[in-house]
Each structure stands twice: as C-alpha cells, then as structure tokens.
Image (cartoon, rainbow over all chains, first blue to last red; front, side, top):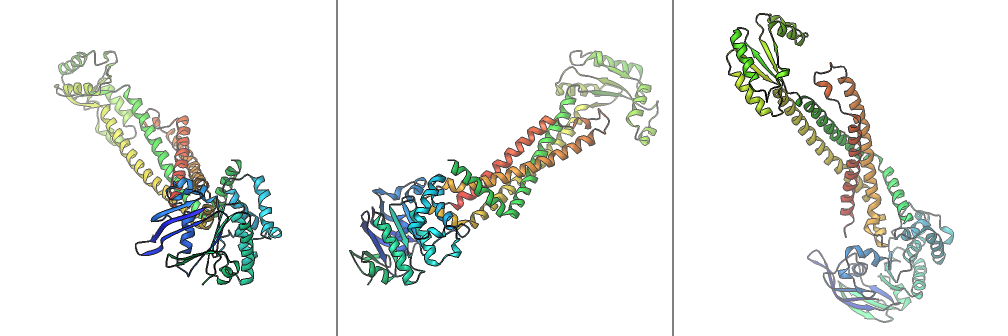
Length: 225
Length: 301
C-alpha cells in the first residue's frame, strides 16, 4: 500500500529530515513510527500525503509513484487518506457535525450522502449525542474523536496519525488507540507517528524507529526501546 | 454540482461580510477608479462630437485691410473665384465694412471695450469662404496664397481652432487615462489585499480543506466570487456617480447659447449606458483577476 525507496528529504541545505529511508507497508497493516522529536517521523507522514516532495528516492502509494503526480491530481490522492493530528485541527466556528460534514462537502458529496454518513461515523467514535456541540465545548479526547471521525468519514484506504495521543492523558489516549485499532480492523492501513512508549508497548504492532532521519529499526510486533 | 455552487456562494457571502472595512475600501477605490475610466470615455466622446460637427463645413475668413482700394478687393474676389473646384462659389459672401461692423457688434456684445476700439471706418471687411473639399491641407495652401495678395490683412482658418480643441482633448484624454489606469491598479491591489487577508484569516480552514482533498479550484472559487462581487459593486457605484455627473453636465451645457460649440459637448444616453456596462465588466474582471492572483499565491505547496 505504501512503499518508500531510498527517500531523502532535506529542509534548506543543511537539515536532513529523512536520509535514505526505505520500507514497505502492506494493505491493512498498523505501523508505528517512533523516535524522539525531530527524528523525521512527521516528515515521513508528510511525504506520504504529498505535503512534501522527496529530494531523492520514490514514494509509492496504492501502486502509484506519487513523485511525478501532477499538482492537479494531489487532491484525489489525499481523498484516499485520512489525517489525524496532535492538535486536532478542528474548525472552531463549526459544530461537530459540520466539522465532519466539511470533509465530504469539500470533495463535492451531495447533501443526502452527508446527512446519511456523518451520523454513522459520529456514532462509531461515540459522539452521536454531541453532534451540535462546538469544539471548545468538548474535552481533548472528544475533540480528537471528532478529528478521527472527519478523517474516516470518507472511508479512506490509509489513515495517517501524527502524535494523536500527544495532548491526552493515558486513559483518554487508550480510547483513541482503540478507535484507531477499530479503523484498522475495517481494512484501513494505519501509520501513526508517536513517542508514547505506553501506547506502542501495549499494541505490539510493527515499529519503525527513526534517529536523526535514519531508520535504525524495523520490527514486527515491536516495542518502544 | 448544486451542492458545490451553493457552497461557493455561501462561503463568498460569509467572507464578504466578515471583512467589511477592507471590503468597503476596495469597493470605494475601484468605484473611483472606474468613475475616472468612465469620465475618460465621456470626455473623448464629447470632444469627438465637437470635431465631427465642425469638420463638415470648414470655414475660412479672408480679412481685407480697411484702406484697401476697390481694385485690390476685386482682385481678391477674382482670385477666390478662380478655384471653383475647391471653393463653393455659391456660398461665397463678401461682408463690406458696414456688414462687418454689424457682425462685430454681435460677436463682441459682451465685450464693449473691444467694440469701442472699432469704428465702421477702421474695421476690416471680409470674405466668408466655404470650401467644397474636406482636404484641410489644400484649404490651408489656398489661404497662404490669399494671404500674399495685396490688401489682405489676415486669413483665419477654423481648422486652427480645431487644433486647440484637439490638443486640449488629447491632453485631457491622456491625463484622465493615466489617472484611471493608476487608480485601477490600486483598486486591483486593494482587492488583492482584501482577499489575501480573508484567506489568511481562514488559513486553518484552507489547510484542512487541502488535507481532505479539496481541489485548488474548489478553494479558490469562493474567493474569486468575493473579488468579483467587490469589483461589480465598485462598478455599480461608479455608474451611479457617472450618471449624476453626466446629468449635471448636460443640464449645465443646455444653458449655453446653441451653436457656440459647447452645446455639442453632450453625450447621448445610449452611449452612456454602453459605458456603464463596460465599467461593470471592467470592475468585475479586475476583482476576479486580483483575487485569483491572491488565491493562487496562497494555495502554493
């Protein structure tokens, strides 16, 4: 589903964010990208959703090399992915329902489809009764659930999560992980960047560890070392 | 498709209201710029009227010295009549001193000082010449010929008056054109800035839109509509001002005596409505282009 071949990405001329990274993530896998801050986890995610272009090497998504994807095709690539962030990136002036509906609205889904799909996904994340709330009326964990609902409402093949539990207490974080696990069970490939030991150790999934932009470990059913 | 259109208009309207001060500034600047553009059109048209009306019957006046002998006068008369293909002999008139004095009394009715210097004895008599041809260089060369005849004091050409008028109109046209161009650029800049501010205020939203796979056009269209609306309203305001200006001018001009030339400086109303449509089009186009530039810069990456 996702394949990187000898990918190098630098910011400016000095800072090497990712150096010669290669890995292959099959469809339906759950992968942790671990490592300290600045080790290149986020950059890897941004390379996969084409927010960044590699300096060298190729990035393949769903059998397609996305390096030479023309600018006009990038939106369609992103429709096959859901993105979840540490800071949720919810729109404060929209309700929970509207935030989730927004993702369908901007890709041109008709109203009746939106009216049908949004409640389903809100029920799935356990916020069916809070559709009319605004983000600032929700707890951090609830906001992250909204953000996951928004990422998943379009049933993407790939979920990219950048420190989704980073702002949450351990118990709330567990709930979020359970949700991402559920999504993974539906067949979606999940790639999650984190430096949360507890989460990685409890899930026992594939771990790709980075250190200063270099992949130093790629282990099935790994733990955070 | 309908969902997209309603979305675009809803977003446009929301953003339009959110930045009311900036919007007002952009609308006002484009209105003033477009008003100048419109005024340029009208001035050009008015001067064209003036020139068109006069070029049909170009007139030359040969003034004869007051001390000229009857022989000299008849020589002038014969010379003029010797070019029947160029001069309309049928319309050739000779005003003797008495007739010339009568005419002068009318011309200088509002100028008693000039008139008091003239007497029926000292005033030059004159030949009024109507050319058959429109070729002004030919007429001019004839006037040079007449000027050298004995007894001729001066030859006046209506064409010389045209040159003053056309120089004046060219000058006014250039000045107003440059001013309106500068203001139009300022207006586009202001609309550009308004849209940029609107986009900056909504950068989170735009980021989310891009991440869930909205196309650049989908993001751009509401902003372009907003700029277009600003330009269109600016155009409408300028049309209102232009109408008021033109009505006032037309009213003022109607108080002048007909035939003085000033009365021809009036623009027909169908031309005015044509100019108004052009102003609305320019305003809308400038607004859409300005915001498209702003949006494209913001959507890079």
